[in-house]
Amino acid sequence: MMRLLNLFRRHKTFSHGGIHPLEYKERTAGLAIRRLPFAPRIVVPLAQHKGAPAVPLVTVGQQVVRGEPIAGADGHVSVPMHAPATGRIAAIDLWPTAEGPKAPAIVIEVSQAANQAVLYDEPVDVLALSPEEIVQAVKDAGLVGLGGAAFPSHVKLAAPPDKPIRTLLINGCECEPYLTCDHRVMLEKTDALLHGIRIVMHATGADRALIGVEDNKMDAVRAIADKLPDDGPISVHAVEAKYPQGAEKMLIESLLGEQIPEGGLPLDLGVAVYNVGTLAQMGELLPLGRGLIERVVTVSGPAVVHPGNYLVPIGTPVGFLLQQVGADAAANEVILGGPMMGMTVASLDVPVTKGVSGIVVYAAGDADQQPRTVYPCIKCSRCVEVCPMHLNPSMLGQLAQKREYGRMEHEHHLSQCFECGCCAYVCPSNIPLTQYFRIAKAINRETPTVAV
Figure 1 (cartoon, rainbow, N blue to C red):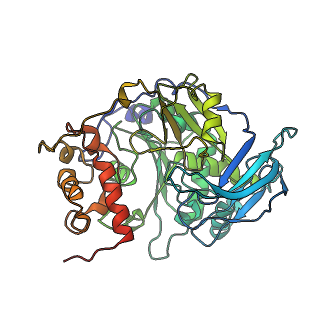
Figure 2: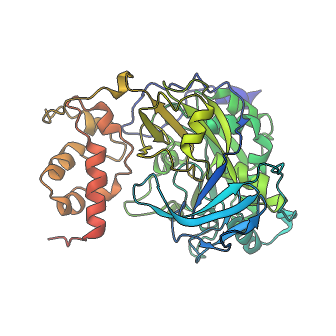
């Protein structure tokens, strides 16, 4: 009883900035996870994670079964790909991506006669494995961060000896508007989530694990708390519903009261941060010896007739998915991810990848889609007040307009910006600050500048 009372007290949050955008979660928060049909063709990009793209293991015309490895990892910071459906390899070719340029992908013509059972697995007692064997098993499963970053999960597990992991932080905040897939995973896959946490604790030697969940999901907090002993190493904590609460640096400050030094990593504090969806998949797939071939995706937005949380095969074309939810005819803008940090797609041929947690669809007449006039900065300082990283977005924006990208980095710490979009959201002049910063970072990566 005391534990539950503590959950409803004033909840922790990060110290500076943040916003409270309209959530738009009510359309899908109460909807259970449902499976989508298989598309006639599934497209598996070889680069849907941070690091080196996977290398094809199959040839055109080859028959594959659901769950079979079809591409191998190319080095340490890379993961393999598995067939999301039983069928025939129709092509290995360039395919449209959400980022813009086409990239190599494996196209599978799905067998309409197959029952699509997973026919490729190798059950194992994961907790009986050594830490090194768990790291390899996580890599073999093709697991990446499912919160959107898509960083290979096994790399986080293999911490250097001089920076041991003592604390796990599990991100169940899901602070982006519209998105509720993590919420449903915490409610419906609680046991798998907790098993995944125990696997990571065993692999890293972490002493404790703290699960952070925003206080607009108290049903998920209760569901997890009910399965935990009062004095165990795993605990769940309600944090204030405030965007971007789920960002790595923000969650560390909210739950631990510590800040990552500039240019540092969570490992510098002995911390590793994982998304709840990632750990639920880990807890579900590793004991079965299976690879990541599907994920839960929230499909919502004003133009979606049948919004929901859908179990979607990796590689499902966005256009096919929109047809299933009744949004293809009305779609004017399609965002992969949430509206704050997501990416607009130019082609509905783009497939769902491992890092896609949501698809938000707007129609031409929606209020959020009306063109906005951009005005000069009025020096109101709202962007400074909401920036969670203590930056000066106004100054950065002015430097971007003058194309002084080097000064943005060397004098005003552009690299500290993680493009949460808070500044652009509150700007009364409608200045697209986040887009300016993305362009500046891209240019600085291509043409590094020297501080003067």
